[in-house]
Amino acid sequence: MKTVMTQTTMLILCAAMAAAQTPADTGYTATVRSSWNSVKRYVAASAEKMPAEHYGFKPAPEVRSFGELIGHLANEHYLLCSPLKGEPNPMAKVDFEKTTAKADLVKAINDSNAYCDAAYGAMKDDPKAVAPMSETRRDTPFRTMLLNVTHDNEHYGNLITYLRMKGIVPPSSTPTR
Image (cartoon, rainbow, N blue to C red):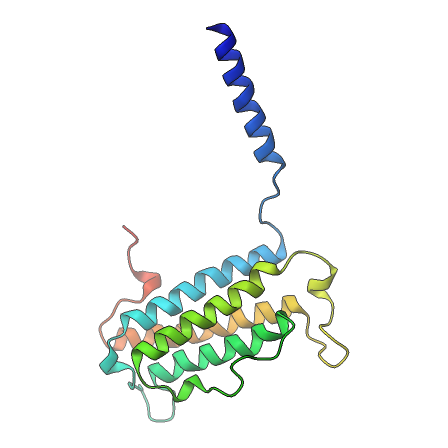
């Protein structure tokens, strides 16, 4: 019995030591990646929550409709994440802002989120993250990631207002029970 307890204790200690040696996802890219993961969920959940009949809703004539905001964010995801991936924008000839159907816009935002996920997932805390992307593009990958998160948060604020005007509780205020 004592041998089994000793072996079990050793196994637990070895597993704990191995886990302690596994680097956690920390650092400046992990921080912006965490922010990305939050805002992308809120935007996608907003797209789901808004009824289809309100996708054309504008609180004022001179602003984008709810659907246009979702399309705008999808456009921007491809625009900002394609250089992070080192490739041309695969949706350069598509303007999701002109899409009107809820199902198409929900798909567009989810697909664009997945596209950016790959770019965010590949980014590590190393000199490449804070070096200019090219001689002609002086932005750094880290700054581009941060710009994308900031842009999404700004427009999530718009989406919150649109949802509340329609009597819908936004995702960030919805209880998680």
